[in-house]
Length: 401
Image 1 (cartoon, rainbow, N blue to C red):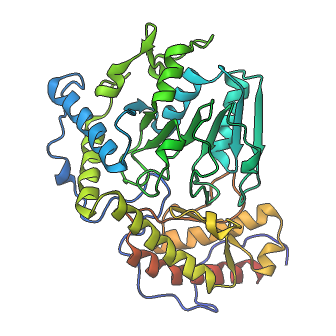
Image 2 (image 1 turned 180 degrees about the vertical axis):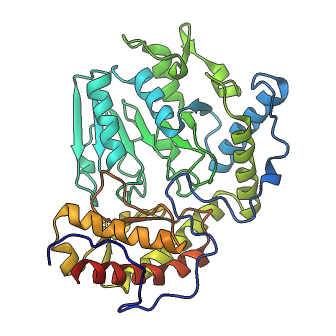
Image 3 (image 1 turned 45 degrees about the vertical axis):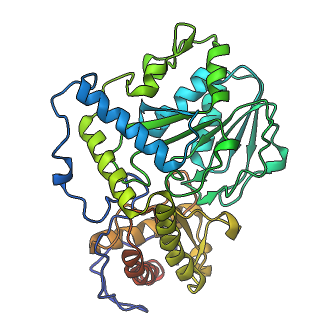
């Protein structure tokens, strides 16, 4: 044994026979995610193509998307919701650039994107009074150490680590700072405690299965007051500017956007929201997601070679389920070889056409990542699990032969 991955060859059955049942839809990518069952291009025929997003019809489409999203998520009436450029990343950056610096900042980091927000706060925004509360992949930081007199940045559901928050009980209602939550893989899949949050962001390409490039920025009255009362001493790129003169730019939250959105993508998101409404709304989307995740959790529980990357069952993500290989021989390899092993598994599954884009995030530990959001069918996950066993057995035979 030399700890390297052998060159892939025509696959032969080893300890596990090649399954015969394949997922009807092999798209288990964590984003952009699979379209909902029944999606067709025909659903986009009413898109306002070739029209200005500032036209009456274009702006109406954008306002409808905002209104439907607020209603389905149960967002408080006094919150504002707007569409931002740059997907969830753009929405988070808009919040950070416009609001940080008024007081000290705590950043909670337990996966890759939380680390990005901490880096931006330090290196791009120059926040001097900055604390980073960090935990390894698979764990949460010490939540009791958070100081809510400071602004707090967190990722509600860690897509790259498979670790999520489950409630806001640990967040005080009488906090002085803002709580800024990147909820891109939680919105529409998990209950969010709106009374414990001040900024919430997500993108269309996650739980709704929409097209990429557009983000959503939700602001509580507390966050709006911060924008009105605090003007940071830094230049802010036009597409992230939330102020107009000395006040909040209310037009952003009424269907106007800071740059040109894709009205085809808007129509696609509206189709997803209509599908979600037909399913029964938020509670139905959460139930679908939970059922999907349970398929994976049950398989993990009966499979000796794999474990959930999340160490505490209570905090397991139900959308991005992250897997680590714990087979003793594979676990004895160095990190690079373990990553190569997992990539060989995902390559086998890709070649067979049964699972696409399930590699662990590039900065995460070696493993695989299976998306279980509401647009995925539980039957496809059930069909996938025997293939995961087959890919593991095949990759192991190739590695240690």
